[in-house]
Length: 313
Image (tube, rainbow, N blue to C red; front, side, top):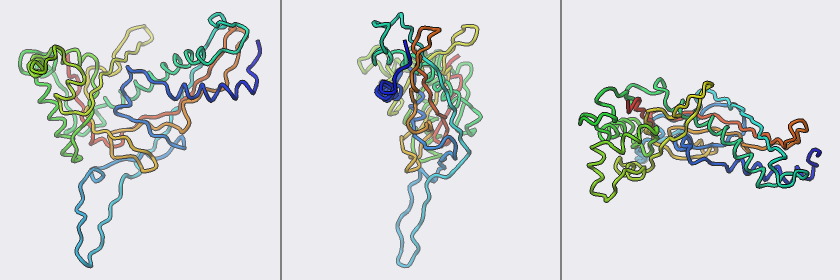
């Protein structure tokens, strides 16, 4: 079996790249806090937002007075996109026709599996960025312990009150309440059983709190559960989002309008992720599909976020 011909590569590669670009895993929620903005360079300045970007301005003017001026966003710290690449292998033994070029469906399965690994790495990076307490001011973070943790059902902990404190902290900084929440799977497991949550939802006719129900209860637009897990070299598994909760005001914008004032973005090189030219490895008797992405999650407006660390024990 030989290398794909140029004509075959020209036909297949754009289609396979669209598979990589369209890939989504429902377990990954990092894009809720860090929506994607495409950039044309691998390095540059982060467009950061201060409280002025969120403010309501007095636009009235008296005759003869100068018109007020505003400037949105400013160049902050430098960013550098990280290149992540992995090759998906498709053995000829798994192909229906071992002596033919793999079809789009077979290649898509291989690419999706490869993209899942690359996407999990990005999810972990987004989670680590959002869960880094050092990024937040003292007023926009709290670490729970003992009876204040939501896994304590003694009557002291109050998730609804804690979320209101976070929303108010964000509102005081940017004039808008947090509209999005991401929480670790362990946090969601405790919230469903928390007496104060159960008491509040019993009149809704629902027996179990769902993400949609909790979002309404907390006064949020969206609430996401971080179910993704990762393993270390020893094979031990951990929750990507741990036991933390992130509240944020998020709104998707574009780099052309410098984004909309929002908590964070994922900068991604225009046209990526891509599938490079597939090739046949004679030694492994397999088709190989190299997948490459160029991305970097950044916090654009840290005052638009609030971190609750160790929400559960």
